[in-house]
Image 1 (cartoon, rainbow, N blue to C red):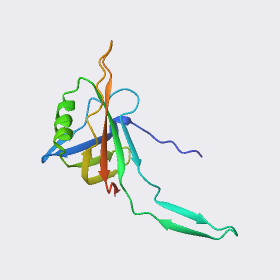
Image 2 (cartoon, rainbow, N blue to C red; image 1 turned 90 degrees about the vertical axis):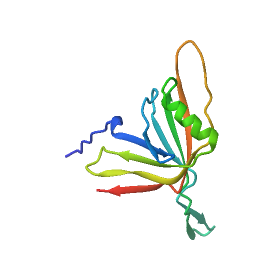
Image 3 (spheres, one colour; image 1 turned 30 degrees about the horizontal axis):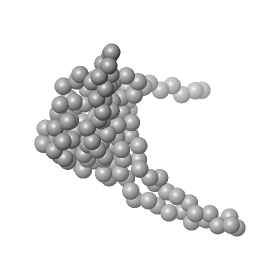
Image 4 (cartoon, rainbow, N blue to C red; image 1 turned 135 degrees about the vertical axis):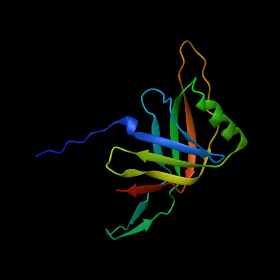
Length: 141
């Protein structure tokens, strides 16, 4: 018997709490709305010439979170002010594709920079990068 799973990108949310005000990110651009990429592997292995090895645990849980937002979204203004002022904020990722709350949380996040603005024939997206320190998985099933 095979397993069947349901996936809905609308069940993924990012909430940024900037200056004690929560903002649910919306107006996502085309293709990919959220990318979460950890900076380093959680474990590494050093192999000896005879096949012996040592596993090292890495405690770095810093991640780069990329949010693709439509160019004309009013949310760009909020994020631009936070980026320009160097505001630190909370970041939460919520994945409601499961029966419980599965996601990630960082209490120390900031925008890396204000993204490039491309003005052309058609409106595009802006890719905001958030550095999320100590981004931990949050499981409540």
